[in-house]
Length: 245
Image (cartoon, rainbow, N blue to C red; front, side):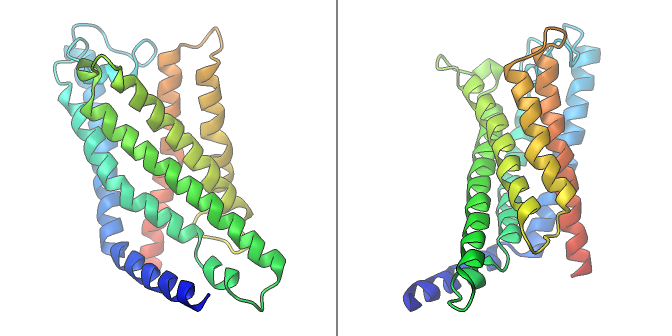
């Protein structure tokens, strides 16, 4: 047990050294500056200069990466791959914040068995949340690398599209539960945790089983917006925590 404790402490020090405030702040700023403005620019270019009148009711997000719909498909490809890389440290930091103080309780023999099991559950939720978000980052990188025009015979673009939205939805779900039920509050409000648990998942279900009156492309945009509605506030709460620390 002492050797395990020693290993965990060394790993934790290395982990904390990697996830320093300067790196996370840079990753958040780059992600915010690149993706949303780049996406808006891509939509405007496709709408005004594309061969078809691009709109979010009839066109999927991925159409922004095809020369059939826009003269500048590389915009979506570039912002997707770049943002995916910069989100990885941020996702690790979210997990770090959620599991803060749990390790000391889990390995404290003086703590009650209930508290130790409870902290293990929190850690498991954060772990599955992290894996899901990392898979979402892989999917985001993949849709840029294998755009609609480069999807290959395997349909890699479609596969990565499923991975990114499923990863973000499940990542929000697991982390949302952890934020909501953790006894000691994190830097993320419980209301945000509640939204993360419910919002993205509901929109994803609607996409899988779309109402007759709503198009699938529009619901795909709603899934992206549902992700923005927790990623952006979560990033801002993280930056606020850095300033107050």
